[in-house]
Image (cartoon, rainbow, N blue to C red):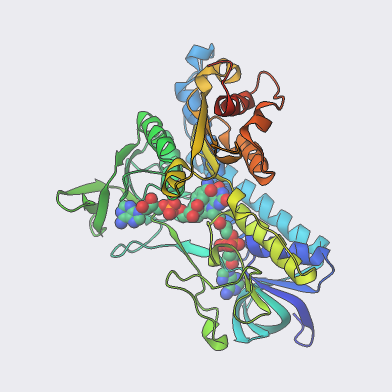
Length: 471
Ligand code: FAD
Ligand code: NAD
């Protein structure tokens, strides 16, 4: 980086939030630099999050299916063996292809990529400790903080990413553990429990609350999903608090007690996965040098245009408010750059989908039943099971349902909750419906190709405003 030149925009962090903003700014003709300390672009999502976890979920499901779900389809297979090293290699190949792709997009859009750790020197200057050695400074008229998040550690257990692991260790284990304890039954806990359980590990998930799935999951969906995952072999301990852990001996032992106090128990395993949430990451960023503070949960405080109290410094993605999701970070990146270049931007926080990539997948958008009840909203419910959907039946993959919630008076769709094969793709239709303010009748009167899983979506809409045909 040249010290003399002042950039229009300096971005700290090359994760989904940062790299998307960099490309968008480059496209708008801004002089832009993006600082990333990891040595690869794409952040948590591409390197140790969304992408590697989905590679393992996809291939472990294939393995599991070949082992347990072929004979009744008329397919006889011989001996099936797992090559964990090759499975991990396939994941690494997907990751490196994608991170290099982002690097190519930087070049294409004239984004300067600075490899190093950035820290505020003053309100317009970021000092960068370069990976290759040495230091530089870069000045920006505007600065965007996109430094993301990190796993919240469990007090008393030291993470070594081998025996006591976060998701980062869970996507890189060298052998299949015999027993794994997962602390936290949120999305990370359940996705990783699925991967290792399919590969042969006995997995116990300990969750403090009375339902799995983390914040936002509809209670009926959570209950049904738990049943399905339990049938796949995952052991659940709900309403249970992990009080301490001990990794001194050979394996790891954790102590639990009933969430409301009382009964104590200990669980031994080879590996413990801490999946109790993530927290914003601003370590070493030099916020103190510019007087920026975070809230009690470590989040950077911003206004509706993503500005911190220092008007030319903005923050987006996991480091600030809202769900910690890659596509949320991406929406904010585009909006933040548009605020900068045009003066307006737009993110509809009421229409951000959530997907859990277990099998079957779980996906939702909008409000769930418990939220609507708490808000005193009168609503209608329509649902349709995949066991009545022709395509799911032909695919011999019929677990789950589509549930639609609409306003009792106006029929406007308020929420959609799906458990089912391909739910993560199907939810896009629900997001579009909510974004456009559709009623359940609008969706019900829209033609859906036959035979597709999406017909279950249409039939759930029919069941919401009138009656389904096939159930
Ligand atoms: P990050 O991706 O964390 O990027 C921040 C970047 O900033 C990092 O690369 C970091 O090295 C860099 N950085 C930090 N400080 C500095 C500094 N001072 N100088 C230079 N660089 C710095 N979300 C989904 O939507 N779908 C999924 O399927 C999904 N799966 C996930 C699976 C796992 C196991 C995990 C952990 C997360 C998953 N997520 C998923 C969440 C998703 O990864 C995050 O929401 C997303 O990465 C947030 O993007 P971000 O750019 O805000 O932060
Ligand atoms: P989470 O907040 O979704 O779930 C954490 C769970 O741990 C909660 O259910 C909580 O009640 C429980 N918990 C907390 N302390 C506990 C204790 N002491 N004992 C037992 N249980 C305890 O967090 P996560 O699963 O770690 O995921 C972190 C973030 O990453 C989330 O924001 C998630 O959206 C994101 N993520 C998304 C995807 C996806 O979109 N598919 C995948 C992985 C991660």
